[in-house]
Length: 301
Image 1 (cartoon, one colour):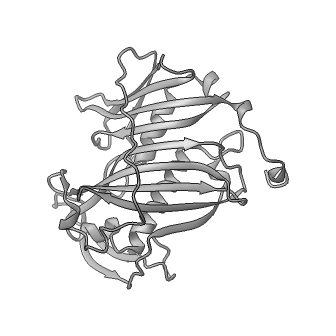
Image 2 (cartoon, one colour; image 1 turned 30 degrees about the vertical axis):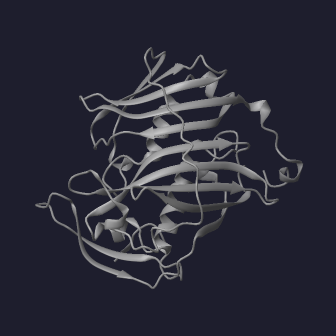
């Protein structure tokens, strides 16, 4: 028996326990055999205290951008498990969650050893989208990071979105309150100035057997010059995920300056085997000196 990655075995978090058999003849390598779920307590707002670990920081002892997206995914997954609609439970219906969009606003990045609180809530929209908001706050309750995201439920076989009402109960289709659909249009990359190539590794794949969303973020940022990355941090990110790509495929990460704003870039991840555009992103950056460490944090950083 293995945990679905959304809860901690042996706790009362309402985790889902799933056992898989590996069937080499099946279309999907993972075949669901059993699904045992504890009774869930329907909670509208998810909250979890986190401490920034050494493995999650960059050379400046700040939370990595890619680690932030891992936090968001794990928090959303744990909340979905508490609500009885985790990826493992949807898999029993041949469905799964797929992330479409992110909108991120950062006022400060947490530091190594700093304790923060990740809070999240959701608001279904038009029986198709599941909007989810995240906030990261520090020990004094100051908001460091705000994130809006949009998710859909995908049919595992057809790879197409399905109505929420076909998979979720009426209670599961309610949320903690309206979340604004404030995602901005992202212009395409037309004249890339920076390019980097990658190949999809098996360690890049997630539960759904496709490249994890945080990997795309890392690929996109890697296209920018090291001289720029070492002196700046992104404070605004608009992300749109377009299509999947599988193990062993080649991808290219491209970026160009967005002339509409200072320190802004347009990003594109594309498959090199004819898969087309996989992800589109826009970032806005601030110089490192714009980020001051609160004096109260000096003793723990």
